[in-house]
Length: 321
Image 1: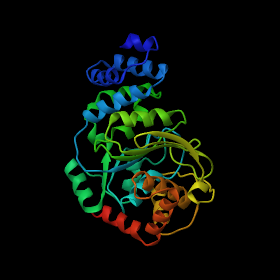
Image 2: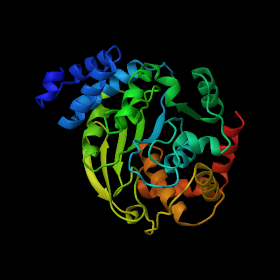
Image 3: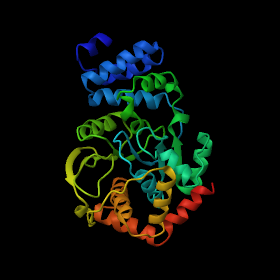
């Protein structure tokens, strides 16, 4: 298959699935060659889907029922608060959330970093995650604990210091096999391919793949692209006005501790630019998981959850598991 990639020929879903499993037993040099050849050629939906399905199939198994995930690929290089973590906590007031996350790679506050800064403990085992889900409607699935097959590949990826297919696989490889997913990507071109890949991996009833003018979130200060999948595909653009919100600034964030403090400020009812950023993305997640019928209703549901104290109460429940 390496020669095929060097000739810039695309792989099928089945070939990509097979290649992932081959890489687990290849030398570091050949792993690097395959990853660079794939990236240089350009990734297709079938290739992303084949790798993602193989990654899920090699993961530690966990059954949490019908869950939603809120996750981004990262890699946008932005210094923002961790919006997806805030959204996941709001969402868990209404439905089951399996947040697949990791430590920071390109930002100042990866979801695992912020989750711990919020005073929450990362579940050590699938049993601990199930306990958290049963008690709180929320479970944090720390990616490194669920993908032991990647131990040989990750050092190669880190040594290469260039983007590879693994930069976008994390959100597609949630071992809980979410039924609903809002997934942020770091380039407009990825929206359609990642949405198609999600549909091919299987198990998804509804998903939004979003890109926000340089962010792997919906942006509160411009136009965002969304590819929606609910058995069929629809691509469209939105602005804060579609959510009944005003445009607002994105305030840089320097650390997980700062991110956690600013999330708690919003959960406590503080009205500021961070609130708009979080409300917009929470509304999209509530719509994706079929809690809200549209974005406008999603904003109202999220606002009520914050203003009534439900979200702060939920955070306290998660802390105390």
